[in-house]
Length: 441
Image 1: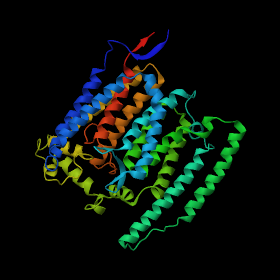
Image 2: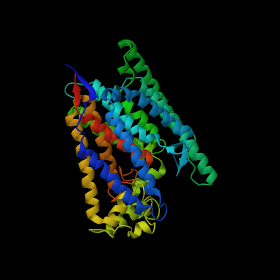
Image 3: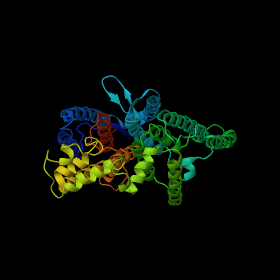
Image 4: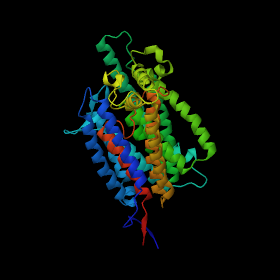
């Protein structure tokens, strides 16, 4: 007797999950009709169309055989990485970031696809390669594999190109402080380390024979899309990709000692990223978060207006279409990153808590898929999908109420955006797929 991945006929769909997943975006459409009323009065209708498209895609994903999703994991990952490279080369710059591909009728944001690819490829990898007692850092990092020096060389090249671009921009603007166009010390250091690592990796490869595990480590699978998204630059989405991968790894199991060491390592990586990866405006967002009064008319403006909007809503809000910060356009990005601020101003503390409870219920119902899953891949897929919704909600609500820096993360199922809406509903489709009963043949 074997277990098929085909859904049973007459299967019982998780109606609670589907109901909550439908209710939240409908509330989002209502909220958008107020948020964009003064500037884009038809935006709510476009969002409704994206919602319908998302439900079609989500329903299709829920019906697909689990084995088919597992089979598609690596091809989807490869296509996603190719699109992320393409957006860096031929993408459409919007507000200083190159995140979109112009497809004529609409724009596509490949970084949204990266989240789905990370869910599937993470679920597939960690369902195929289990370690009794949990994963170790050595198993996750595989320090001597050949992909690491190639990554270091690519990073050195990126730093050189970015510094040259910053130099040219400062020179054209007549700035007094012009970045050095020849970061020789950094390039030499990285290339030197890369050469040493490459020699050690080649020796290890020759001694042990060819094995894909020696060439590509799990961390490489995570870091490729993470780095490509980060250099667009899109710190918020890159953080989500990394958080989803970390959630899958934690659920798959990691030894406590190695987890503690990894936690310390994260701090070191954060320091390096602050020094060599983040752009000046991204650093300014963090410093402004720590001291909001330092630049309240500049980098701190978004957060300040958001806090005013949420606070002015008090207990029950000012009423639908009566939010002054929203209707008078004081609140920036009120249809994307700051839709929760609109809700807080017009529906008050009660409305905000209600939405948080609905999001909590959605995540809990998605995690039920992990408990009900009949195979490890489906369980990890459901966890990855739920973690994506969780981290989006956690970071977005945190930044709009002033407890986290503003990093450009949208509120799931509430913020406007076609790519974002379809991505979130497909992720919910993964969770539905994981908990549908399977035929026994």
